[in-house]
Image (cartoon, rainbow, N blue to C red):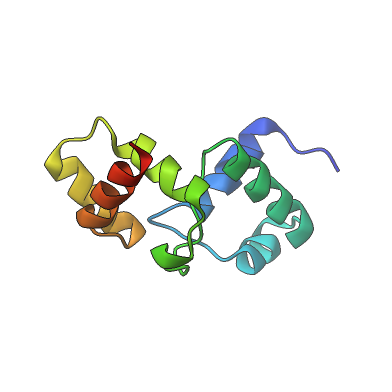
Length: 103
């Protein structure tokens, strides 16, 4: 089945903080197969648009995920960085360490 880009984006947003909805829950609610949702999430991650699930600790993140976090936070103020980290279960020190590792 073909879904509109608007619907796809709306569902993808539900996977992001602060919602962090489980794919199985979204599949039931939206009437979209879990396989389709996994594919959408995988595509979005490949484009650097989504970070790992909120229930996955940062230690389990790939280097690509960590780099995406570094890029996303590069221009943030300290207050914005703090908010970003709270939403994703991170500490600013982790972002700083990842940034140093990228240099």
